[in-house]
Every structure is written in structure tokens, then in C-alpha cells.
Image (cartoon, rainbow, N blue to C red; front, side):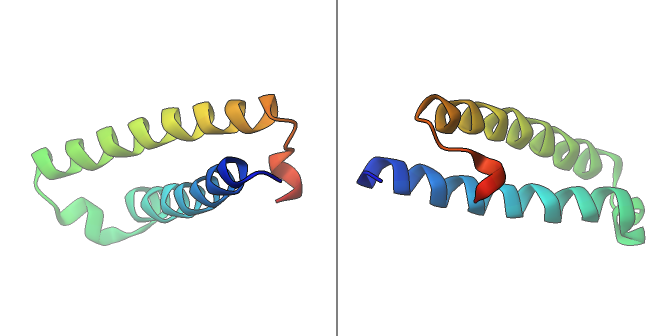
Length: 71
């Protein structure tokens, strides 16, 4: 695997982990509901952006012939 591909794989793993953690906080942690409306909105907006970024990264990896389900 080339260096740039390894960097993309590492980026995918880190971003995927962050998406899971933020998703879990938003949808499972009662502390989320105690945040003010603006902060809740911003966190959901951030999660949405992270998911779009993750989808793009997965597409780039697959285009390089890297199967993310095997990572």
C-alpha cells in the first residue's frame, strides 16, 4: 500500500471512530438533551458534515481498490 493510501486508511479509521462517538452522544446520552438548542443544533450539523466526509473518504478508498469492510 502506498503512503497516501495508508494516510487515507488512518484518516478513515479516526473519522469513523469520531462519527460513532458523536452519534452515540447525540442519540444515547441524556446529557445531550441538557445542552441548549444552539449547541444541539451545531453538534447535529457537525455529525452530518462528518458523515458526508466519511462517505467521500470511503468512495476514495474504494476507488483505490481498498475495501473498507476489511479494515
